[in-house]
Image (cartoon, rainbow, N blue to C red; front, top):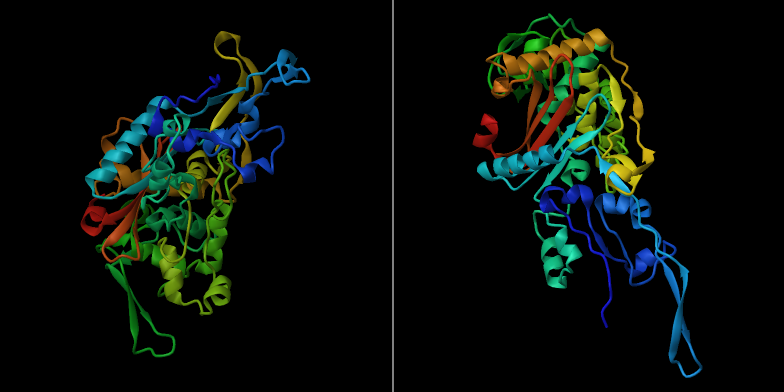
Length: 445
């Protein structure tokens, strides 16, 4: 018996698989929660295929088979004709997506790592221009019929090719957090942006019960006297220990206000992107530590949080949304993959629904304070001492911030790079992270 059927052909394969997802034969648990499906039907399993299943599927036709008393077929009655599903027009730039995927893959392999993610977003609208998770998989294997063995091999791969790190992996941010702390300290009027803080490469904090005991919190290298702009440019841990936890005569934000400003940026809420499987972030607090870890919150916890370490967990997508607010002057936009839903294609296509930019809120930080943060990030690229100086060769004026995060493996780090451009009128925010970079290589990124 020969049956006609349709199959998906995913032209870009692994390059877009975490965005598009794939279709698969419906299973028993799915049949229990949907209507008008049969056991032979296919259904979206991940990505846009799953999120927009109702728009993409269309309506199957129905035919009544007429048989006589002996079961001999005598004819067919067409009860209803099938109707094609709608099509999606994406905000994704296909050329950029391919370039980002190939560049991320090359970088991951060159530094001996295995995993990473990248997000490019328009800060004026929330449109997602590129979204990549590495390693990936080829979604065409599901259209062609994957064997159970091949599926199990992918499912059990220790590097998790099905896992969309861009929207679901939760990481400490490292120094990526520093622009948010700077904005918060300015908003709270804790420090002038021009005040100089000495960075000798470490701070010494006395034990509150035994003043003869000192705890040392270090930076990477001494930076000498730095104001806020230079502290952002060189990524001075000492400066941000000071404005985060307070030191000597300088008051700090403290854990409650650090959490306040990270939450203003949306760090503990899902962004609502039109993809399934998104995770929210998490910002630790003294109350949480006491309740969950049954431990007190120490000054060291505040210092570690001030440079994006500790139990802080944020997704790359959340970082991109937050940096977009810095770039655009304080507006949080909902990230959107799909631009519009259409019927048909080409010149005869009819628009069924077009998605407009959606506001998630505005961050309560004054424009002049955000401008100082932007200036520090710009100095990080254009000044020879800046931590993102390698981006100065790009034709467009870029503002950026790097981050390097300790992991539970000695000498192994996660790295971040978060940027926007052009500086005067940003059209793109680009965030990337790579997991499991060995120390020597991390120091040079």
